[in-house]
Length: 59
Image 1: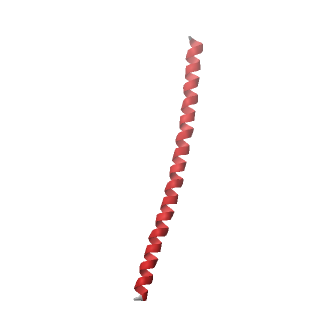
Image 2: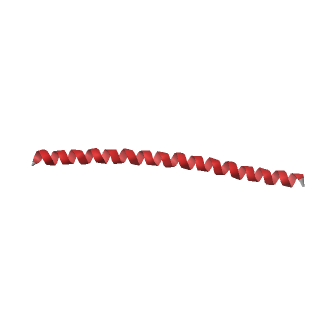
Image 3: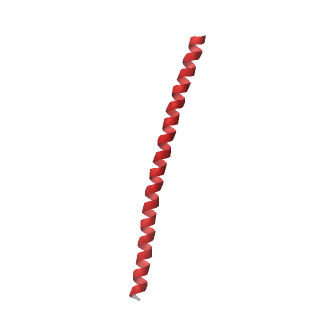
């Protein structure tokens, strides 16, 4: 009976550890994606400003 209880406890702890690990990994990955998107937005804003400037000087 003790072996069954210990094995169930180990299984529960394993699930909890896996859950925490995957949550941490998901949060890290999402942060990486958001940072990349922010860099792309900044680059697009700069490109848009360059286009607006070139249109303004061409007029």
